[in-house]
Image (cartoon, rainbow, N blue to C red; front, side):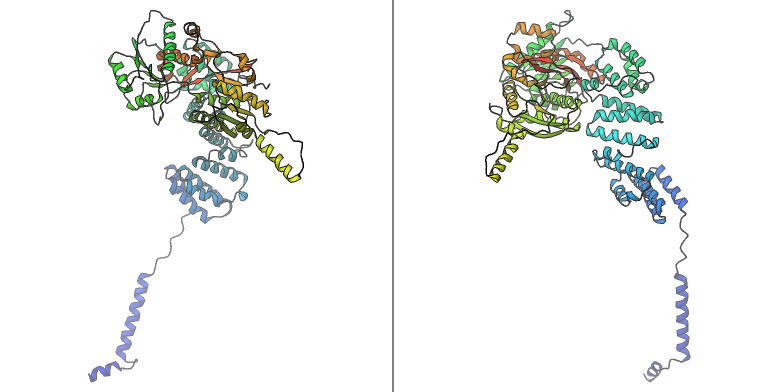
Length: 636
């Protein structure tokens, strides 16, 4: 213990301890030398990073390319930094990374960009808006970018972006204009053909009246050439199609439409071989609450059958009552097939159409006489839906008003599910076209006095309210005449004849007699009655050719059923149902084709819904008179 104590008190200068300290210092120094980091490598040259970014873009590794561009932007300043950030935003957009693209674009200050870079910045903002479904913003953003000195590549992108935005907004004619302007700027043959295919598809969404009225410039105007060839495809019988296309070629030499695949298909189109079914089943609610309606459809169907052009063709027609107690539509349909039906017409009730479609087993051409409630996907191949849908009329009215240059509408329609549905179809199409509904008002259809909703619709109530407020403020009697609002271009009206005959004079009473009224067919009773309809003068409305243009079957129907006037549209529905059967395949396989029917010009959409384009009339001296497409509604 004494020795230990001696060692612990050994002085610092003792040789043993000095040796240990020296050794420890040497070891620490060696360890420090062993763990020192190597010097950093030299930064990758900017040119090499640019090559890496371009390679990543070429390999469609867009996010990687964008990150490299952002890294490059940190290495430089001024215009070089702006260029790399624009490249990064473009790469993010190419990869559909809208959030990252938006952040990069926000980091740029537009006021500090050169003219060329500012144009590119705006183009990228427009692409971002398109991807984010802000379609209304795209044309607004691009408006100042399209100038006389804009490079061809940028012009092509501007027209393409605007075309895509307009198509998604439902502005089909504007989308057509943009794609027609895009055509001469395209150098890739494959993309040029794709562009022509898109033009053709957009033209298919336009009604015949739009194709006719928009064809204003003479040949060789490119847009008019497209509109005219679409009209030829839609309205020319197959036997006359070749000469019509030859004449079109002569009027529009070198037109791009003639280079497309669909034009070659038009030239090769042959009249379809019309099948002649030996047996037709007709499913109608002959008993029950819809018996009267079903009887009119049945009689129109038979009238068209007896007026068939080939009397030697005599198919067997069987009728099945879907209105009988306990009738099951699927069981009746199956029974009709087992009994030999090669074509089926019906059912008529919406719920039974939905039930039959939901079953999915439709092995023969079947023409339902109504539309199913829900239609999420494509229908069975042989299932077609046809009816007197008022939505077709509402959309046609919106289109006519737009073609006539109107932009601001009031809407007056009956209270209830039916009126709401018709108004919704009008409003949706009108707003898609770029129009504005200033105000919409429904009315109680069973009433006779519509003054309250009309005063509110026309703004008369607001005018009177202001007068009352002035009287209270001034404390004296004022000379006052109520006024209606002055910012309206036309009134969309849905009403049955009784209500329409009351609404029209009340519009005049509330100072709106000079406002054009565009109405659905329901305002016309179906037969002339000038004594009751004299107040309707000036009202423009749509209706079926059966009533306004005549039909050869109508004479025989009215001879057999003199009181058919009130149900005339249902007789026409039945007549068209018979005539359509052999034409369904043609409508399905030949896009843009139409059939002239008693209920309108009939076309088929991708859901195999038949749509009607009606004719126009205007009340004059209490009678309907044809209203040409290029006229503005007269005011009394």
